[in-house]
Length: 367
Ligand SMILES: Cc1cc2nc3c(=O)[nH]c(=O)nc-3n(C[C@H](O)[C@H](O)[C@H](O)COP(=O)(O)O)c2cc1C
Image (cartoon, rainbow, N blue to C red; front, side):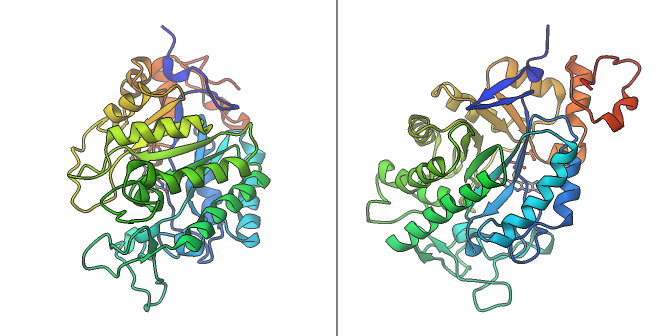
C-alpha cells in the first residue's frame, strides 16, 4: 500500500508534495521593531530542508500593538517587508518548499514577556509594554491590566492592517496566508462568548461574533492573488463551560468555505485560563475529524502528532487531509525524511545532501 502521508494534496491553487506541514511557531527573535533577523534565516533555512510540504511562518503581527511580545515578527512596515524579503530570498535560493505566513493580532494577549522570561503581561506604563485592545475590556487573567474595547474605527484600522499585510505578503511572493483565528488571540476573542461581550453588531449572536473575523477574511482574500490560498487556523473549542465549541466552529468553517477559504487548520484552547484540556497523543484529531465531515475543503490536524504510523493513520482513515507538526519538527527537523523511510514515501533532499541516502532506502530521495 502506498503511503497516504506522501500523496500530494491540492489546497486552493497550491499543490503540496505530501501531507506534512510545518505549524507556525513564534520565535520571539525579531529586532524589536517587527523585522526578521539572522535567527529567522537559520531557523527557516533548517526547516526548509526538512522534506515537509509547506513551511508556515510564525504568527506575524499586522500592527505593532498586535504583537504578543516586543520581539515578535511583524509585517506592517517597509522595513519589516525588506527584512523578511532578505530571509525569504536566501531560503528560496536553496529550497523550493512552498512558504506561507500566519497573519495575526494578539488582542488582549499582547504586551507580554517572551516565554523564556515567564511570558507574563507587561503593563502599558512599563518598558516594552503597551495598552492592549480586544472586543471587550475583559483581561485574560483577572490580575492583568484590561484591554481597551475596540470601537468601529479600531475595527476598520485592524481589518485594513490585515489587508495591507496580505498585500505585502503577496509582494514577497509568499505562497499562502493563514489567518490566526485560534489560541485566544484577537479573532478568536471575537468568536468566543467568554471574551466577546459586545452589544453592537459584533457581539451577541453567533452571526455577530463571526462578523469581524469574516470581514478580516474577506479583506485578506481580496488583497492576495486569487490563485494563492488563504486559510484559517481555529481553536475548535475553548474547553470551557459557555465558551466557543465544535458546533460553532463548524458554522464558522462553512461560512469561511462559502467565502473562498482554502483550508481549515484545527487547533484548540488558549482563550481562557479556566480551560480543561485532555492533553494526550492526537488529542485534537477528533475536532479536525468533526470539521472535516462538515466541509469540502482540506482540513489540517495538529497537536501531539509525533509518530509516523500515527500520522499515516490520521490521513489514511480520513480524520484529516494533512497533519501539522510543531514541537516534533523542532526536535527532529528531518522528521519527514524518517517518516518517508518508515512508510515507503519519497522526499526531496538538497543536492548537497544526496550522498547521505541510507543504503536500505535507495529510493528515498527524489533528488
Ligand atoms: C515554540 C512554539 C511557538 C508557537 N507559535 C505559534 C504561532 O506562532 N502560531 C500558532 O498558531 N501556534 C503556535 N504554536 C502552536 C503550534 O503551532 C502547535 O499548534 C502546538 O505546538 C501543538 O502542536 P505540537 O504538539 O506538534 O507541538 C507554537 C508552538 C510552539 C511549541
